[in-house]
Length: 201
Image (cartoon, rainbow, N blue to C red; front, top):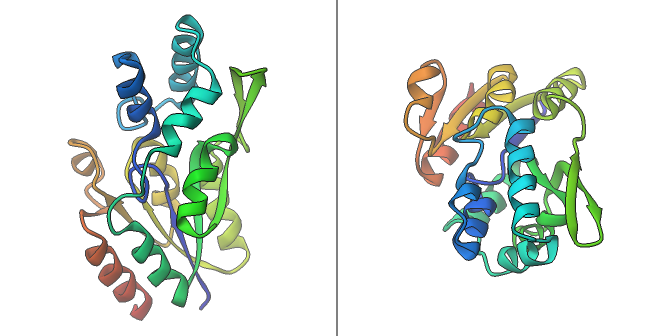
């Protein structure tokens, strides 16, 4: 059977962008992530409002991103996966944010959203589609793929529950207890071993 590994990006192979922006700007309001707020539209409306209030544009965010590195071990983990499987990154990040990390990761296949801009100001975002991660998994399954999915936050639950095999990775407190049927792992070598066991099936 052909297999696809679907990975979330932030928190799984890269650091959380908005936490880094909050640290740079000194605005704790920007520390909220999908680990804290399950409603992504509500979360982005909040972020865009805070950016507007403090006159923070895309260029500053991109500057912050350019100084970030991958999570330790992420590139070798991804490279190892790509030897044996097709890998897709299913993320709620944005095209305008992702370039730096895609370069560091060797340009894996990425499906994400797009920002709407007025000059340097972020005014809104354009989602791929509603429940994009879930629909991507459904699409791959419709093509006959076995999908193994890995995520860390509330916004990953749809794809994790739909996937043929799934695991939370370094999930926030409370989430594994809420979804006890999902595997929960904390290290890349554990993920690699688990994926191999799934493939042996």
